[in-house]
Image 1 (tube, one colour):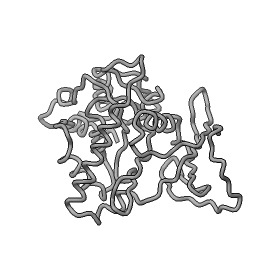
Image 2: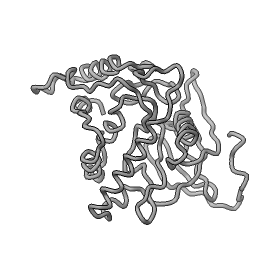
Image 3: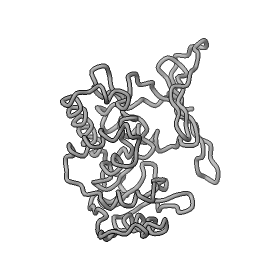
Length: 269
């Protein structure tokens, strides 16, 4: 753990698990401090939160207290991340309580945060049309790579589109016959901007007035195409999040066409 772990320690505090998902668990281990641990916890999440706090401190993210990682063949396979506990409720748990005006305001607030996140500068060696995860590791997004088909660490727009199409074909995507030519409908971009990469109601914390107090789960972040954040919002999700997706689609600031991405996701989950 790093030296900036919290100095306030209560030996009598009773730890409790507060969240779980495939590959990691989150536990409250001290008043105001959580431990996120598991195979899904990678250096990318800690790196992303530090970048956000450095360049866009107005974007609410947990403060990192410390971290540990286990490595095999120079690659991390298990992590422990200590950070602030962010009180409130997930947007997913309160969405049904919101009226139309409040839903619109929350979605506009999300897009405002996205606009701020997009200003985080690229590394000096990453050109305006190149894409990379926040820590430079190969992308684990099913559209781009897997443990058996590792994505290049750096991608240009043509390579990214070729990756999606080749993985689509390899996964028998051509069996879905329609009138759309898959390579031609994949979106194009000539810029890379910073993206959270997994914004959804489950990763958004709100207060009692439904104002956003935290964005969580930054492990999928990096510099990606202009449309990427929106495309990631529209990936397959819990049915409880479908209406939120519709609202984010109707309030999006640009007319991104992600038909090709959605078509690829028929086979690339």
